Amino acid sequence: MQTTTLSFANLHNHGELFANLLRARRQSFIIQNKWDLPEAMGMEYDQYDTPASRWVAVHQFGQVLAGIRLTPTTARCGIYSYMIRDAQKGLLDSIPSDLLYDEAPVDEHIWESSRVFVAHDTPQKIRRIVHAHLITEMTRSARELGAVRVLGLIPANWPRWARRFGLDTVAAGRVMNIDGIDNQVVSINLADKLH
Image 1 (cartoon, one colour):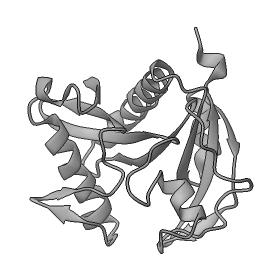
Image 2 (cartoon, rainbow, N blue to C red):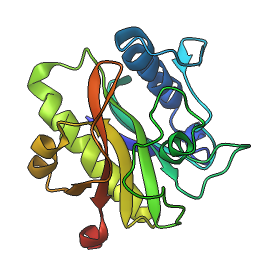
Image 3 (cartoon, rainbow, N blue to C red):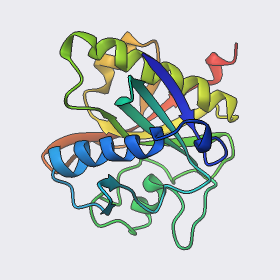
């Protein structure tokens, strides 16, 4: 099992991995979750898949088992910045605008994690290992990018697994039901992960 953080600067070094990540996202979000998202050539994408973002992939033998997108909170692309902030500003119909307790930050040391998934066909017996690889690589990559905090809109059962992975995580917004799933914005403190 491997973990790779992709960027527009290193995509050429990893063959089909980025395309396979977007294919796995399509399977997870469009096919499994039935979300109405953009797709092309069997891949899911959106306005936040820009050169400003990074993509963490857990993969084995060419198959993507899990992934996360990291986007700086300073990102700008047309009218868009990052998903949580754009939802708060009312730019996204699918996410309530009152998702955060405070104003969405714009700070070079805060990144957003989004499009978090574990592929539906990842065997149950290795799911914990896959989660551990995903969280470890996300944390490492975010720190290397200068992040001291990561915001993410994730399933509201996060307290159960955050402790398991040793994450310093607190709620940053209310629990919201989105497409039948309780979700919540959390803030992950990476300041203790400096060493």
